[in-house]
Amino acid sequence: MVKDTQPDVRFLWFAGCPLAAPARANLEAALAQCGVAHYETIDLMSPDTLPTLQAWGSPTILIDGEDVTGEVPGGSACCRLYVTPERVPATADIVAAIKRAQGLH
Image 1 (tube, rainbow, N blue to C red):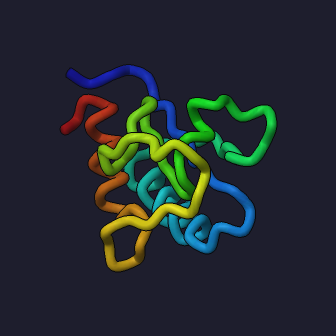
Image 2 (image 1 turned 135 degrees about the horizontal axis):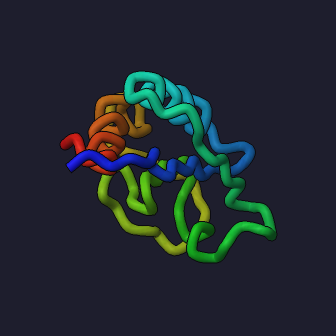
Image 3 (image 1 turned 30 degrees about the vertical axis):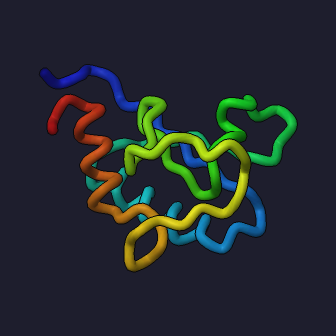
């Protein structure tokens, strides 16, 4: 079943994280491929950020509250490395997570 709504996409990061820019580039490429026009950027170091979100590392991409790689929060904001050649979520993995959220598997 295909959902009528766009998925809730969140990009979690903090200033100084060297992996934030390449992760954001892959996210934006995936969003373009899937026709999703909006995502929310959340600064993990902001005092306004919910503690449940501050438990993730930077960069993290959440689609409808789920990490694109299926991981769980690590407990504190730190730089996060992924097991990919770029060390960030691959565009294809982000696309797959968006399609799952849209009911397109």
